[in-house]
Image (tube, rainbow, N blue to C red):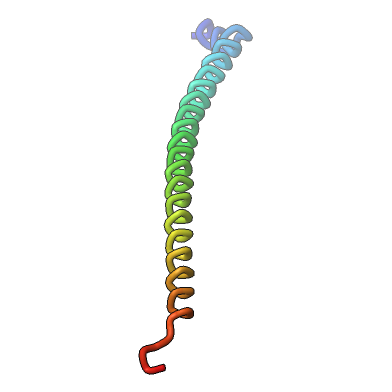
Length: 83
């Protein structure tokens, strides 16, 4: 029994334990990195979609403004029928 305790207290056992702990931490960090990478990729795709949609909205707004401006100029030049 004293022999087992000696092994557990030995520098080699401590080093092996530390290596196992470091490997566990590295594994956890790799998993976290993969999850974050996936999240960033999804956010990038969402942002690309939003930017495209915003571009389409701007185009539509520009078209509506042009149509409104031309309609306003047409009504300004026309005289009402009661003149």
